Image (cartoon, rainbow, N blue to C red; front, side):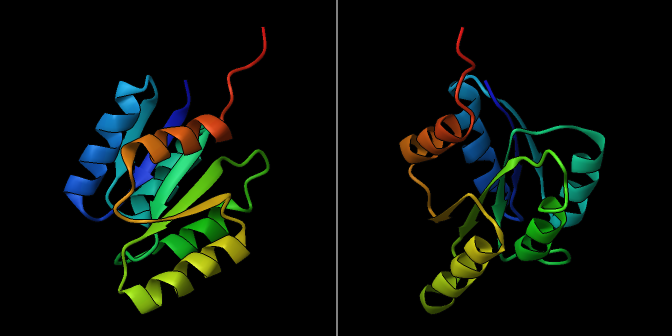
Length: 125
Protein backbone atom coordinates (compact mmCIF):
# COMPACT_ATOMS: atom_id res chain seq x y z
CA UNK A 1 0.00 0.00 0.00
CA UNK A 2 1.30 3.42 -0.96
CA UNK A 3 0.47 6.86 0.40
CA UNK A 4 -0.61 8.82 -2.67
CA UNK A 5 -1.39 12.50 -3.18
CA UNK A 6 -3.45 13.40 -6.25
CA UNK A 7 -3.39 17.02 -7.43
CA UNK A 8 -5.82 18.14 -10.11
CA UNK A 9 -7.95 21.26 -10.45
CA UNK A 10 -10.77 19.17 -11.96
CA UNK A 11 -12.80 17.66 -9.12
CA UNK A 12 -14.15 14.72 -11.11
CA UNK A 13 -10.60 13.73 -12.13
CA UNK A 14 -9.42 13.80 -8.50
CA UNK A 15 -12.44 11.77 -7.44
CA UNK A 16 -12.16 9.00 -10.02
CA UNK A 17 -8.38 8.61 -9.75
CA UNK A 18 -8.66 8.52 -5.95
CA UNK A 19 -11.46 5.92 -6.08
CA UNK A 20 -9.41 3.68 -8.37
CA UNK A 21 -6.31 3.87 -6.18
CA UNK A 22 -8.29 3.37 -2.96
CA UNK A 23 -9.91 0.29 -4.48
CA UNK A 24 -6.39 -1.04 -5.11
CA UNK A 25 -5.67 -0.57 -1.39
CA UNK A 26 -3.75 2.70 -1.36
CA UNK A 27 -4.08 5.53 1.17
CA UNK A 28 -5.08 8.52 -0.97
CA UNK A 29 -5.40 12.24 -0.33
CA UNK A 30 -6.29 14.91 -2.85
CA UNK A 31 -5.59 18.58 -3.46
CA UNK A 32 -7.21 20.95 -5.92
CA UNK A 33 -4.09 23.00 -6.60
CA UNK A 34 -0.33 23.09 -6.24
CA UNK A 35 -0.42 25.45 -3.27
CA UNK A 36 -2.52 23.08 -1.17
CA UNK A 37 -0.39 20.15 -2.34
CA UNK A 38 2.82 21.92 -1.28
CA UNK A 39 1.34 22.48 2.20
CA UNK A 40 0.34 18.80 2.47
CA UNK A 41 3.80 17.67 1.37
CA UNK A 42 5.33 19.87 4.09
CA UNK A 43 3.09 18.23 6.71
CA UNK A 44 3.07 14.58 5.59
CA UNK A 45 5.13 11.96 3.80
CA UNK A 46 3.80 10.56 0.54
CA UNK A 47 5.17 7.71 -1.54
CA UNK A 48 3.71 8.92 -4.84
CA UNK A 49 2.52 12.30 -6.10
CA UNK A 50 0.18 12.26 -9.11
CA UNK A 51 -0.03 15.81 -10.42
CA UNK A 52 -1.76 17.54 -13.27
CA UNK A 53 0.54 20.00 -15.01
CA UNK A 54 -1.83 22.73 -16.16
CA UNK A 55 -3.49 24.30 -13.12
CA UNK A 56 -4.12 27.85 -11.93
CA UNK A 57 -1.91 29.37 -9.24
CA UNK A 58 1.01 26.98 -8.60
CA UNK A 59 1.05 24.66 -11.62
CA UNK A 60 2.38 21.12 -11.83
CA UNK A 61 5.77 22.11 -13.24
CA UNK A 62 6.35 24.54 -10.36
CA UNK A 63 5.25 21.84 -7.92
CA UNK A 64 7.71 19.36 -9.44
CA UNK A 65 10.51 21.90 -8.85
CA UNK A 66 9.52 22.00 -5.16
CA UNK A 67 9.28 18.21 -4.91
CA UNK A 68 12.73 17.66 -6.44
CA UNK A 69 14.27 19.54 -3.49
CA UNK A 70 12.90 17.10 -0.90
CA UNK A 71 15.64 14.85 0.43
CA UNK A 72 13.59 11.63 0.54
CA UNK A 73 11.25 12.76 -2.20
CA UNK A 74 8.16 10.90 -3.33
CA UNK A 75 7.89 9.40 -6.79
CA UNK A 76 6.21 11.82 -9.20
CA UNK A 77 3.73 10.96 -11.94
CA UNK A 78 2.98 13.99 -14.13
CA UNK A 79 -0.18 14.03 -16.21
CA UNK A 80 -1.64 16.44 -18.72
CA UNK A 81 -4.73 16.82 -20.84
CA UNK A 82 -3.68 20.15 -22.33
CA UNK A 83 -4.29 20.74 -26.02
CA UNK A 84 -2.59 18.03 -28.05
CA UNK A 85 0.30 20.15 -29.32
CA UNK A 86 1.04 21.62 -25.88
CA UNK A 87 0.52 18.36 -24.01
CA UNK A 88 3.72 16.82 -25.28
CA UNK A 89 5.65 20.00 -24.42
CA UNK A 90 4.35 20.01 -20.83
CA UNK A 91 4.97 16.30 -20.37
CA UNK A 92 8.49 16.52 -21.82
CA UNK A 93 9.25 19.46 -19.51
CA UNK A 94 8.00 17.46 -16.51
CA UNK A 95 10.20 14.54 -17.51
CA UNK A 96 13.22 16.79 -17.89
CA UNK A 97 12.55 18.27 -14.44
CA UNK A 98 12.64 14.83 -12.82
CA UNK A 99 9.14 13.32 -13.00
CA UNK A 100 9.42 9.55 -12.68
CA UNK A 101 6.56 8.90 -15.09
CA UNK A 102 4.54 11.01 -17.52
CA UNK A 103 1.06 10.13 -18.78
CA UNK A 104 -1.63 11.65 -20.95
CA UNK A 105 -5.12 12.13 -19.57
CA UNK A 106 -7.49 10.47 -19.43
CA UNK A 107 -5.49 7.77 -17.67
CA UNK A 108 -6.56 4.16 -17.90
CA UNK A 109 -7.18 3.02 -14.30
CA UNK A 110 -5.36 -0.27 -14.78
CA UNK A 111 -2.32 1.64 -16.09
CA UNK A 112 -2.50 4.11 -13.19
CA UNK A 113 -2.61 1.30 -10.62
CA UNK A 114 0.35 -0.41 -12.33
CA UNK A 115 2.39 2.81 -12.31
CA UNK A 116 1.83 3.30 -8.58
CA UNK A 117 2.60 -0.37 -7.85
CA UNK A 118 5.79 -0.21 -9.93
CA UNK A 119 6.95 2.98 -8.18
CA UNK A 120 6.17 1.60 -4.70
CA UNK A 121 6.89 -2.11 -4.68
CA UNK A 122 5.93 -3.98 -1.54
CA UNK A 123 8.91 -4.63 0.73
CA UNK A 124 10.28 -8.17 0.53
CA UNK A 125 9.49 -10.26 3.50
